[in-house]
Each structure stands twice: as structure tokens, then as C-alpha cells.
Image (cartoon, rainbow, N blue to C red):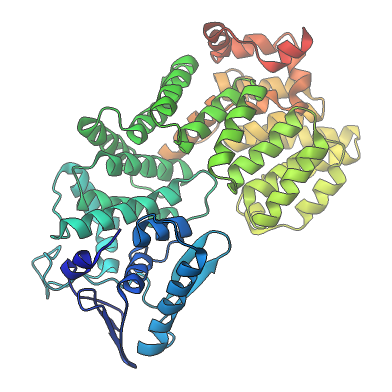
Length: 517
């Protein structure tokens, strides 16, 4: 909780056209000036420090009331007074947006126009000594990040109280970008974490979160990240673990960076150890949700996913996975309901759209899936769903030897082009009862065996993504692939990728074997 003495210590600064003096509790702008009550100034500074990100009501109560039990009316009155600041000093410069049932965020011209106080140490010896936040973030986008990781780190703020507050705001912003199923801008999240480690290089948490952000950037981007990005992620993780060997974000980053180099059982155990250290580590819970599903343990994976949803109830990723798990368990009506309700929350989300198409396509409703495909949203054209889907859906909707042959050829060609074609192709080929082609694709993608393997050069990012998809084998345990699981070739395939050893070491059986007994 900020107190009067904290306001008195905080230096004056400019934001856009506003001159803000926390010590005098005064805001001056082109249209005039206004003096604020301490509480109103605290709320204004909290929203301003969040730099356009949402500040929850609980965070405001904690920061500005010290967690004291007060009514919602107190916060509503404080927000109303903050809204008056713009009207009194610079009309139209900013607004306070209400996020229903969540909190508030500051919008308008002053967002991202931070200037440090002229008394602070500049990032560079050049210029006036004033450094805008935009210039700072731009610097981090270039060589400053590598400098920070390499150890050339300087403190940006002299005031320790203010730096702690700013550091925490940056971490919160970074976490939002890392949240599973978040649409928060990942570039801004990564820049916020890079700024945080420059501000407080002795804090392991910042380095751990930065390692995760850098690793995710490599996995999510194809061919546009510098070749040093993965190495920087390793270095950030190592830096965090030197400072704190138990830092959970850095431990998770280390597991993810090793990827398929770790066997199934070791990855499983390390994820459980991280969750034991930090039971609210939704990122680790998300990874264990995926691992158990990839091992055919849909019932166990369901429990982990529900635990993640309890922490992030509106995550599109966890809602999509809830729908998929209903579908895998044969609860098609429940799956329909979940995915349709999730799409109301996230109407333009590509993952949810793909889940909707997949469930329709494999539950006797290929014509409805074709209707969705015909809408050709932006992400279809950008390759989220491949060109092989259309002939496959036509073959599922109105089977004929010619249509099935065309679909099989399209799926096999897509499997040679990359991971998405192989993974989705196996499910579609299985749905079309082309079991030999499905096994040829799975063998080629998972074990580099046969003729259906990736062809042509691959970028480092594509190789990393392919490696990730080879340990995310949940598609083998979906309803259309039941035809593969009934085939004597399936268990040898599982043995080849290490799954049977994982089941043995854990003393478990996949759900499909339990259901047979």
C-alpha cells in the first residue's frame, strides 16, 4: 500500500501532455491543473504504472487500500475522481476503461508515453537525461536484451521503493503474455520482462519468466527470430537458477528447452516437482495436462485441465481442451456446448475454430464442417488449417473411391510438408478408414521411418516445432484414431516413441486399454 511518505518520495514526471507531481498530489495539463486526494493519486498512479494493462479490482484494493475491507463504492468513487483528471487538465488525453467483473485499464494517448524524471539516471549519456518508455523498449528489442543477459545491467530507477513497484508491474505484464490461452501481445510481454531484468537483475523470478517468454517466441514464430533467441532463453534460465535453484519458472523453462531430449517419465516427474513447489504454476499444469493427454491418459489429463481452468477460468486454451476431452470421452453433446460457448467469448480465435471444425468433421457432420471452412476466415488463408482439409471433408461428407483417393493423396503430401499436416493428416486419414496411410504418416513423422517424412529444407524454428509436436501425441488417442489403436501395429509405434516405457515406469495403462479390460 502506498502511503503519504511514498508519494512524497516519488519524483515528478511527465506523461504526454501531463506533468504529474506525486509529492504535491498535483496534475497539470494544457487545460488546467487539479490537486488530488492521496487515495485518488494512488489509484491514478497504479493504473498509469500498468501501462495500458488491466489492473484487477483486487490489485487496486491491495495497492491502494492495503487489502483493507472496504466496499465497492469506495473504489467506484475513486475511479470516478480519476476520470475527472482528464476533464480538468487535458480533455481527451486518456480514459479509464471498465473491464466487467474484472477491473480497469487506462487507455488513450498517454499510454506508452512514460518519461523518466530528469533526476534519474539515463540509459545513455547522450541527450537530455530523459528517456521515454518507447525508446527504452525499442532499445530492448535490439541489442540491450543480449547485454542484459550477458551481465551488462544497470539500474534504471534510483528510488528502491519505486523500482520495486515498477518491477512488480512489469512482471505482472509479462505473466499476462505467458498465460495459457491469453491473447495479450507477446512482443510487449517479452519487452516488459526484458525491462524487468534490467531494472532488478538480482531477482530470479524475472529471469525465469523471461526464459519462458523467449522460448515461447521461438516456438510460436517461424523463421523470423534471430538464431541466438533459443540460446538467450537458455542463458536467462541458467541466470535465474544461479540466483535461486528452485525458481519454478526457470525450472519449467529448462524442461521445455530440453524438449524431447528428456524421456517421457523424466519430463512428467519434473513437471510434478515444479507444481509441488508452486501449486499455482498454471504453465506447468498446462504442460502436464498436455503430457498426460499425449500419453493417452485422458481421465488424468481432464483433472489437470480442470485445475488449470480453476486458475484461469476464461482461458481459450483450457476451454478448448475441455471440449476436446469431452469429445475423446465420447461426450459429443457436452463437447459441442463447451466449444460453442467458448467461441462466444473468443469469436475470432483460430484454435477454437479448428476444434469446432475437427469435432464436426469426425462426428458425422462433415457437411457442417465444410460450411465453416467455406467462410474462409483469415487464419485459414494463413495456414492454420491446410488445403488438405477441404478434399478430406468432401470425402467424409459424401464418400466415393475418387474422393477418398484425392483426400488420401492430399493428406500424404501435407504430411511431407510439416508437423501440422502430419498430425492433422493422421486423424483425417483414420476418419476416412485409410489405416495404412495413417500408420505410414505416423511412422514417418514420429520415427522417421518410410517415405512419408518431411521433405525440403527446414528453419531452426520449424525443426523446434516439429520436435515439440513429436512429444505432443494426443492426436493418437482421439476418436478417429480408434481404428489405429485396434491395429497390432499401434503398440509397437508407442514403444518406438517411448510411451510403453512411460506407462511401465508410472505403473499406469492408457485409457483405451483400461476400457478394453
